[in-house]
Image 1 (cartoon, helix red, strand yellow):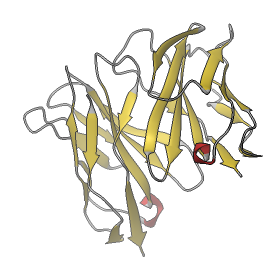
Image 2 (cartoon, rainbow over the protein chains, first blue to last red; image 1 turned 90 degrees about the vertical axis):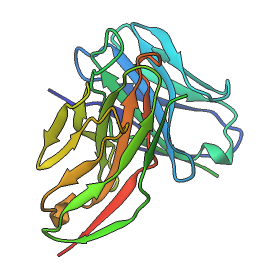
Image 3 (tube, each protein chain N blue to C red; image 1 turned 90 degrees about the horizontal axis):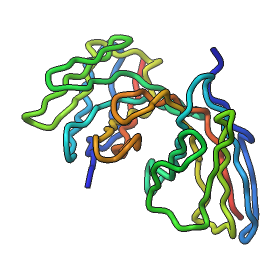
Image 4 (spheres, chains in turn red, purple; image 1 turned 120 degrees about the vertical axis):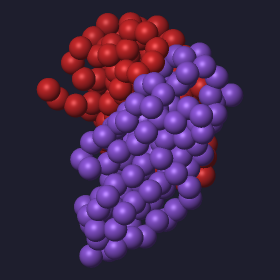
Length: 115
Length: 113
């Protein structure tokens, strides 16, 4: 079974631009979560989508948004990029229909650099 | 709110040494606990998990026991290898927080031959 895939793997953008990252979950997984990883803040939860609906949201500004398609693929968008948005963005998929104990499987991440 | 605290690294060990990485947590409700590992340039891999008190998760020689009384989930391995060099993250999912993982800060392990 193929794992979680993320595209692109690397991205360089300029301040003020916007960016869209893509995530394809493991086949059969309906939950997709996004995390931001930075040296200073560590791993922080952005949001989770389940059956095309945002189910949970972390404490990030409205410039960060996402969506999920009917095939469970997900995209996240960051508008008006800031230098502080430079990070590794990780996507994770899970079988979870309800909370608790369902393992989340992570993709390799997209490394975003904002200059 | 929920939080996870891990010992700060880096932890440097010689091959075949015993490893312990401490992890304690604060959570509302009864969380599930996880250890993830991140190798250089890669995403996170689930190493092991435990979902109730006194559960022991184990994988690839690593193990951790869910201790509710001390709110801890320490990672141990009896004999580390150079290939175990990576960053290890302790994490939890709390019943009141949906499917959201809360992570510790990560502990870098370096194993020397």
